[in-house]
Image 1 (cartoon, one colour):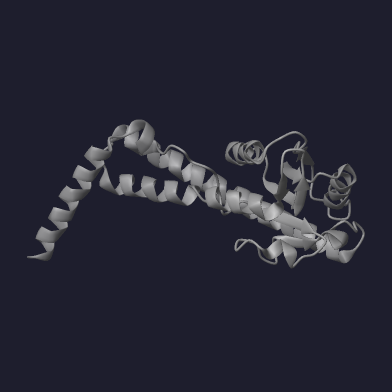
Image 2 (cartoon, helix red, strand yellow):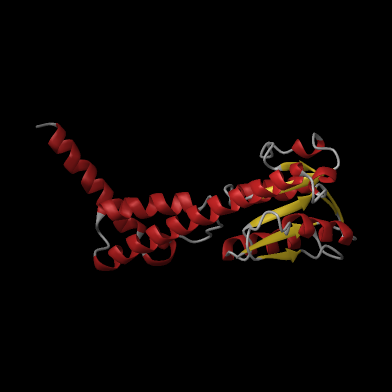
Length: 217
């Protein structure tokens, strides 16, 4: 089951977004929604809640209205896209706007991320169905890749429990953590929490010397 986050200050539009997503003709299975509260909240509070949900796997996609009015500040949808792209660039996001060209202010928005609101909200139209299909395809890809990377990382970390000086495993762990950062925020890596970086550097330096010796033969 997927859960899609919605960031829109108009209750009627939030309802219409859900109707479009839940189109029975698409038959995508159970879907839940999380509507983010904007009233009396600052930008940083909203961004932190969204980022926490992405990292924890609470939501698998985010639909954002281009212009969001709150009593504290006016936020533009591309600001949220930029923030998420910095922390989790692979996460599926869509900006809804009445002027699609306006929504492309961010360098991280493209045709797959900016949809004309009036078209998307026409739940019975083929154009709307295609947009929704694209959201589900992106969610499928995101969830599948994230799970695969998380499983591979867990497997490699188990190997380190047995031999923390295995250089090949250490390199693979670093590679997997780097790739996984594209899918969720990782404030701490395995090396931040459980491994001695000095020891790792020592191992890599010794390997380099060994490779140089072999190369000189």
